Structures are given as structure tokens and as C-alpha cells.
Length: 238
Image (cartoon, rainbow, N blue to C red; front, side, top):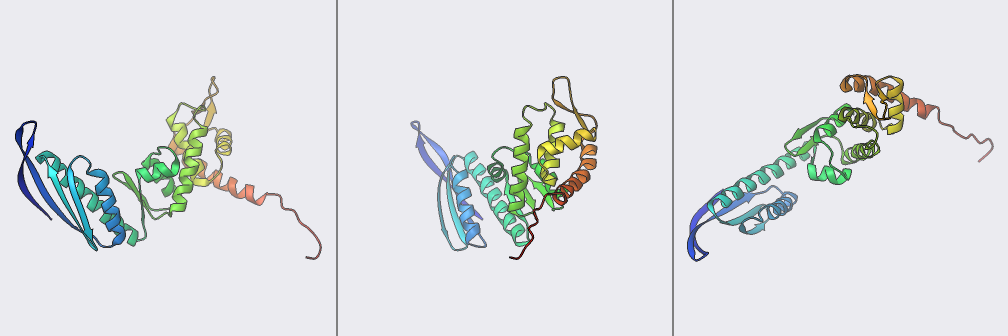
């Protein structure tokens, strides 16, 4: 709910119209209240505002031109809906990761669509909503997938110019947990990729089809590597 009134302010030697609106926002708990306060303070730097709160309630008084106050109203509405949605999702067992949180975990910019696809291929529910991802994967799982993705992208910087090759290899590594160079070796043996005359990796077939065929092989590869590991057996009493 918001209340508004028209003000006259002096600027550049003349009277100008300014608008003041009051927004009263109800929140469900302390976490939502603190998060919304932080978001509003970060986003309303373009207008004059005063903000106060008490348990379950936030009051924002915004002053500025008609256009600025109208935009501020849209921002407050967007942030409020976002916080409430995230709260409902968490209550339902889902986590929400913003593009900023994802970039921070990865240490670089990662496509939300690519991350969502990796999580789905690992068996998790996931969808991209605006600038965030909603998933039932835990933060540890998401962080590990992002770590593998960023590591693979860095290793591939000088190995290929093809974005399709990068998607294939990054997804294959991050979904299975197999290191990038083992993925490259297996993909070459299966004749999904090869190196051109300049030594760069290139695709030999459509990348989605290659990924579909590559993942089962890599999952078997991972099991075989574990089962064939060398164990030292020590006889005697302990």
C-alpha cells in the first residue's frame, strides 16, 4: 500500500513539482525484513528516501520527481515480490541463487541456462526465473558444479574457439565430476571432437547428441577408475 502527495521544491531558481509517496510493506519474518531492507537501500540511491521498520513491517517514504518516484514504486514492488517468492520456495525445500551469488561462487560469469542444464542432468529440479535459479539442489552441490564449470572454462581458454565445444566439455565434466582432460580424451576416442590443423578442439557431431552419448561413458569411466584404484593390503594383527 502507498500514500502520495504533491510537494513544491526550489531548484535552479524556480519552483519544481516533487512527489512524495509512502509505502507500507508487511513481511513474514526477521530474515525477510532484513533482506528487504538491504535490497531497498541498495536500489533506491536515485531518489531521496527515509526507511524505518518494526517487527513484520517496513515503511518507506520516497521523494523525487514523478518519474523517479514511479520507478521507485516499481523497484519496491519487484523487490518485495522477489523476497516473498524466495521465502515460499525455501519453505518448500527449494533454494534460490541470484546471478550475483552464482558469479561469486564461480569466481566468474556463468550462464544461468548452462548451470540449470547441468543441475537437471544431475537429477535435480531446476528452472531459471529472471536473474536467478530455483532448484532443490543444495548450496554445496551448486557450488561444486560451479567450481568444476569455472575450472573447465579456464582450462579451455586457449584450447578452442568453439562455444559448442566448451558447452559439451564443461557440462560433461561438471555433471559427472570427471576432470576436464579425461573428458577430452574420452570424447576424442569416441570421435566426438578432434584437433584441427592449429591444434584447437573442434566438434565432429552436434554437441547435444554428443553429450547424450558421452555422459553414460563418463559415468562408467568414473566407476571403473574407482574400482581399479590401488589399495595397499597389510597382513598381521592390529
